[in-house]
Length: 158
Image (cartoon, rainbow, N blue to C red; front, side):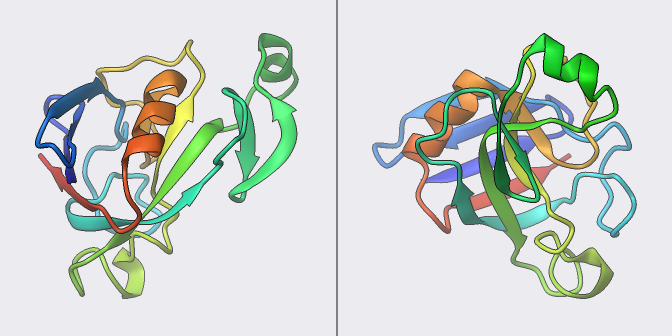
């Protein structure tokens, strides 16, 4: 079981325990691949799913600081908070496995709060648009969340 995220293809590929392949369209960072904190980029390399957050929450559940706010995304809520970077439905919090590259110091993926998470359906998939995270459709991230194990390997490639 493992996940590969291709920045060039804007795809997430999940190989399940039965070696079946599942491919999803995603949106990675508008700023491209970058390792450093504050870059707004998606970090490359070997990672793992460090935490799964949001089990049992409704589709569109809004998270701030990895906590459910009690809100469910809607166009009215979006209009009320036009600058919010929406983290919805489920969070797969990533941690880097490569010291000095995506682990530790100012390149630490986990301390940069890099997630695989849901986003509003109005947001584009298949092109870079995030602030560093890997965005997915809510339905897709719910499915992935239910099938991926904690500490599942995640590789982010160009």
